[in-house]
Picture 1 (cartoon, rainbow, N blue to C red):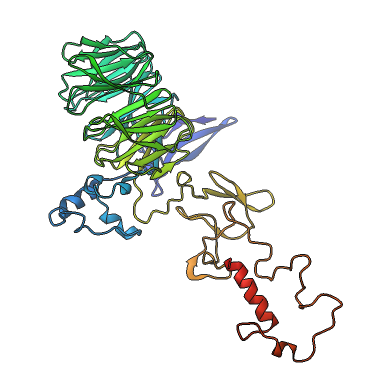
Picture 2: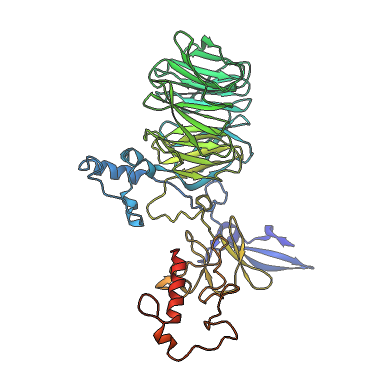
Amino acid sequence: RVDMAMQTPAAAANALLYPSGDTVVEGSVSKGDEKVHVVYHLPHQKMVYDGKRMRKAITRRTVDYNNDLMMWIQKRIYEQDFRDRKALQPHEASIKDLLPPEAMGDQPVSNITGRYVHTSQNKVRCPVNVVTWTPEGRRLLTGSSSGEFTLWNGLTFNFETILQAHDGAVRAMVWSHNENWMIAGDQLGTIKYWQTNMNNAKAFQGHKESIRGLSFCPTDSKFASCSDDVSIKIWDFASCRDENTLTGHGWDVKCIAWHPYSSMLVSGSKDNLIKIWDAKSATNIATLHGHKNTVSDVTWNQNGNWLLSCSRDQLIKLYDIRTMRELQTFRGHKREVTTLAWHPFQEGFFVSGGFDGSINFWLVGSEEPQADIPNAHDNSVWDLAWHPLGHVLCSGSNDHTTKFWSRNRPGDPMTDKYSGGTIVVDVVEDEHGNQQAINPNVAQKVEKKNYVVEPGLIGIRPEEPIPIPGLGPGSAIPGRPSTYAPSPYNRPPPPHAGKMPPPPPGMMPHDGFPPGMPPPPPGYYQNHQDHRGGGDRDRRGRDHRDRDRRGY
């Protein structure tokens, strides 16, 4: 029994610290009728002012855009257009020359955000229905099916705060153009006003059923809402008064968007129709019959002339409202298309999310997607939001996660599981002493060797020279570790690799004549040459085989 009350006054008064950092405490131990004086060495613990142990520092991944912006501010003085700009090379040395998306207007494909950065998830897991960035881009705000708002840091993507904002699932959030207000709607039909400090200023009942979309007018004096009660309402922002109600859809209205600089509204419904409205007169201007299933999302381009829509028929359609005609149909999703988002600076570049968890990047004028992430999420993607600078994309999904995606830097290997590559994340030994490579997609077993696992490179690297692709394992580049490893994605060598294949049945064997036939007379090979004037029997055989390989 340790009697800490029997500490000596010197030990109690002084917190003796050895050079190693251990705290020394003196006391006594009762052993029968006698007490033994002992000295205790307690492991050193870092202390803070409130007496709690300091948390261990965590290295967080970040996407720092300050270097790009400072480089652009410096270069735009003498780089007037793309002809003066330095071309990016596929090497790490060109990372410092990477510019923000606004400065790369002639290279929309360079702004594809296909590089996985981080996954954020709440302790109480629930689907993420809406994601939106704060106007200055410092934080990301997510709305979940539990009615909570979660704020994530926009630079290091770590959790900041959470608040119970609504009583029902959050279905829509949108910021005003002056960046001072945000309105949100929930499953119960309630609309709430929020300030930038997340202070709830106003709340009122807007619809009888779930709100599906919200959109501000260009002047921020009014906003529109759509709901599953088959109605669209125009609200005065200051008085929270319903000014007009637009009716015409035959089923639930799933999405709505206000024109960037006019009084036009566009809405999509479960009745497969897209309707364009005049908000002043509350009349229907036009109806588009392009889709064959529920219209999931509609959005205007910044030029105000292009209207983009997606539907559960797996199609994305682009319309020109000047002629009310369809410009292009984008096919590439294997399941329903759930959400769309135009890039903030690239006029013809947008991203789409699918019900199967895929994310596709599109360019107007190209039929095929410029890039795709087939397994971005384990479940349907409900919302996508670009960072105000356009260099980071955020996706919210039904798999309870929020993921961040950034641009690939020059020289990035693109070998993560979202890019289709193979990464070894761990190497362990089984009970027989064989090393096992643990892969996010496939676990493969290899022979026991001295393996070196390096981040960002493909496969396991035995300490042997690297083989040159296409020349077999015998060729090597001196001075580099090997990146060759058995992989399920590599084709096995043919059965007769490096050897002459056997002749087909019925053909002559390699000695040139069938069995039982007498040998040729002397001088046969010298007098019987091929039609090209040279070569013996073996030479002719090689020539015929070469022609067969080349397909002549």
